[in-house]
Length: 394
Ligand SMILES: [Zn+2]
Image (cartoon, rainbow, N blue to C red):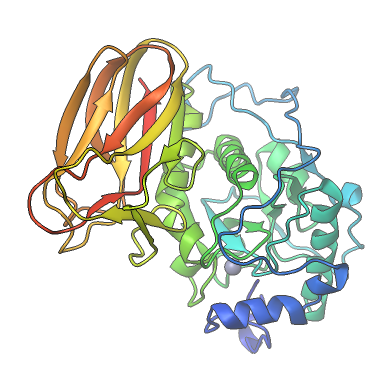
């Protein structure tokens, strides 16, 4: 959702600047996505896997010169991006301005539309056409954002002219997605509402890939990825997606460096397991994804475990993400399993949350197994917390 680009008459009737989640969801219905037969999914409801996942195309036109931020010789994956003609955009209703200078940042948005469970390409294209009509209704000449990403991971051109300039790595069209940033920030709209729901994995992995490609093409540092709310008073891109931007920057940086294999296991991932004494909370905004698990300390063997497939024997950095709250345990045992042994690291969870905390670097053997566990066996009464872990090959 967007404020409009007529800054002199900024009276956009559907600005989401001060809308809460209920308003955003109501807005999605008013704006007509429901007319396509979709329903608003309850936050956190798992969606079906896409029937027809998008494929990666080779990069026939990769620039010869690696821009700043990309290591020499690193091939950045090029996502398939459907042009306006491919997804069936209407013609622009006026002149689209362009600038010669390259954009200097990426702004992440959500469309505040329904969290559809139809992950098909056709569904993504239809929502893109709906968005264009909403933006025409704002009096805009065309779709406001430069690029659109569907919940099934399909990438689409937004405003006409965005794609050819991105592919050439030179200049961009002036968008209408964030006042003051429209000529210098590439706007990406993620279809859905991420105030309390976590983006589907298909969307997330494609978003990482897309941002890495944009950074590579324009020479933008991955640290220059922001949320709409960083520049405008708005709920966009939703609390959950906004809380994942540090992770987005980190994963984009890894993609650009070309050296890292990385995996994240969240407490909602298939690789996570914990008994019934581990309760679920979304209390802290420093959580990773939609929620996290917590338990009281006890001298029992009742681990919350994270399993993953280590692709090859080598050196891996192990990190944990948790909300750091005064009152959570100051000595939570994290156990790292290397394949040949284990190490226990005590973590102070009363502070320093909402970011990846390194538990150290370990020599790990290849294979699928429990790689990290959180134990309840510690002192005091303050909760121990199990949220997300990340492994990165070094
Ligand atoms: Zn926005």
